[in-house]
Length: 202
Image (cartoon, rainbow, N blue to C red; front, top):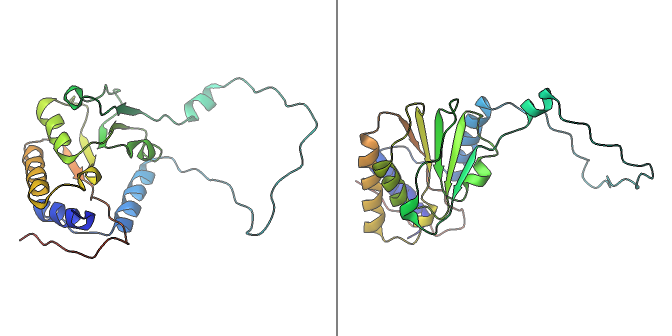
């Protein structure tokens, strides 16, 4: 089933608006960057210029020992990765006391962890599918310190038949309905070169 159809189904079951992948990505990264510390960055070389420098013959100075300031400024991934070998053994990771949000995602969690705020824990379940998220929330409990759950899973359901994806999304909705925490489900991304087939849920 095409990924654009999945987005229509997810939006239909959860009753949310349908956004483009670009809008979703920009909104998600902006939300994260508002909480994370901004990095000034460095200006790049103008197009068409050669920024290569000749080798410096002087000996390289020794690396200074880390200070308390540099240690505090060093970014912490706070990423927990679970291998796909045995889904039945998947559980939630351990959380630090100052983490109040968990991002449940598939293998893309490695990239998302680079943009998250410091109070987020990223739980990356390789090849995770929508039904896996439902099983996790049904079988395992989150600590009281976790107030927010963000779910970014669904791309691995691209080979599901229409009835299967509807069942998985509906089952996940039922599990989320009894959660007492704030829940946000990100849209399944799609690509601009995919066939323009549409599926409307009434």
